[in-house]
Length: 289
Image (cartoon, rainbow, N blue to C red; front, side):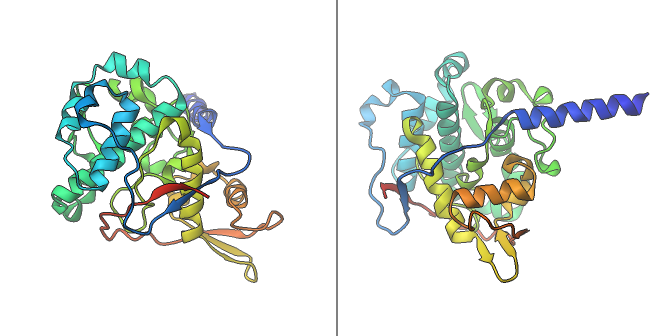
């Protein structure tokens, strides 16, 4: 009997996982990603008005200023002092949630690595797990933002097929995004060479921005060999398999959406090695294509 209960519970976890996935449809965006320096400023805000800015605007300006090595101490104080109830009420759409938390993750990662890369180089698991980000009255880690908030409590070692949001701390349960969007994996930058570039995300066009960065990253990484019937894809699509639909067919559909393989192709999906070499200042900017 206890095994039957366990199986039912596990099935419910899988169901909850699949029902909270956001799988974009339609044509990819008309934005392009430019990585050639010098990069222009992307989100400029009068620093005397920071306290008046929305959380999304503040977070986008934070990333822009970190990219360009400008002071961000006032941003850090404002993030820490945010009222959790007001922040939760303000992040009332999927677009606002995703844009804000991507900016927090990427902005703080770059801020920390520029200040002192030693923790990353010494032991990455401790670096990602350290609660070192003060926001809305809580101190949280990069892991809690990525796997808790942006991936809705996904467990790291189950490739995303098990999500335990219910058992996570209150901060994560409150701020978890409405649905997991696979494109976040082509936007999150942990400081490794294999990561996609850092850009400021804006709530009013984050969908187009995610499409542009996904296309750019996949074009850079994916290797299709029609003769061998094989396509090599980023290791991220294996580590977080459930976020991408969980099957080779679902992953091929993503590649087809971005024009990486022909519409009628059914190649075997294999995974590229991941390069953890530290690479700070991996930046880009969005432009009309």
